[in-house]
Length: 150
Image (cartoon, rainbow, N blue to C red; front, side):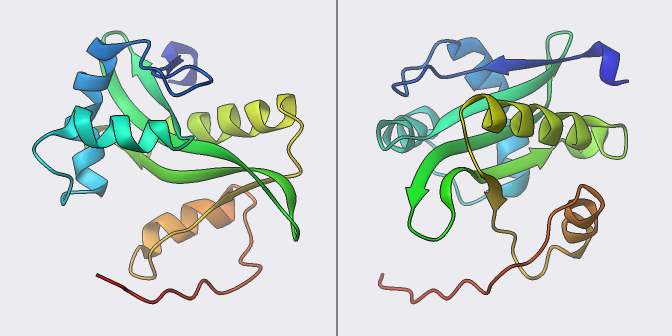
């Protein structure tokens, strides 16, 4: 299946939306991961993109099979990294190579951008996703602590 897949960048380097049609097609897939997103999907993502995030989708023909929202981050403990905010494969396309294709594309992009690390967080309840990440060579180097303020 991977030969039929293509990576489409929805945003440019400054977060500008380059492909609004693809952004609209991505919404139902994105909601499979983030069902709490507001009705104004494009508006919410515009705010996310304005803060440095970018978005890429995996397309098969004119269908969105998966997506990633990602950003470049520099810090003191990992150096330059490509951090993935959201990564989701459409439920209808799981176990067909879409996730593997997307991770490979993100890894290649991270290398091209001079990153030392490709990183993401995954909810503790997402055990199937964890298995996938382990198969793709990810490790758990630390715990993420969070305190809700609102």
